[in-house]
Length: 281
Image 1 (spheres, rainbow, N blue to C red):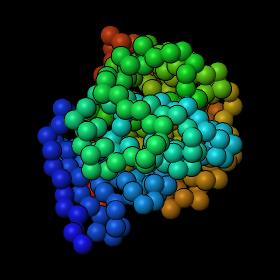
Image 2: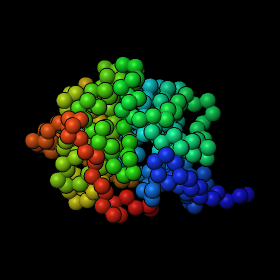
Image 3: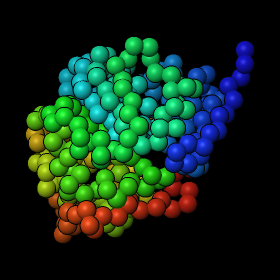
């Protein structure tokens, strides 16, 4: 049997590398310009290796009754880890994936093909441009996991972007985002303030050390027009191999403080992670 070998390719936005996991037969790590982006196990698509992906998975599990098919829009494709997860846990879900790096989408689908017949459509396009042209009320869930290198692009951080996201979601839809920051959380606080201009309910899921300001890390944000099942979410995240805390209500308002919503003319990308923040391991 041929041993899987790493694959390296220059794509539209960087150098992508697919590396086989020696411990799992058909599992792969995707890095772009050396930064870990995604992990996929083709034999076990419900296996989510990265902490932030596990938290997005817990959120996806709690936004609707188990197994119910959903219309899901993914901004940012990576190795298509979450589309595979949704297909496995909610078969029949219709999914759209938007990623500006067409070369990366081609690399991933060539070497890590999607399940045959899965209703997953890929689009090589800018996330915000695609969002602004998408049909209103066409998605149950919108997942934003867009990083240019290791930073969220500035044009995906503003009130105008949040309004575009809300327009595409159905009334009972849920917005999910993967964000990264460190104390004093200028970026994270501004994102909470921005989304609060559009959505009535906000929930944040993060590792306690990140929330206490001890280290740089990911935080998963949920936003909706209706109350979210924070009890179920807290139960799942607390029981995870990488436990996390769920913040909402008064605790979240305290974190936002006097942070102001972001306008297009003031927008900046998310902060650059410190060296070693997202090591491969």
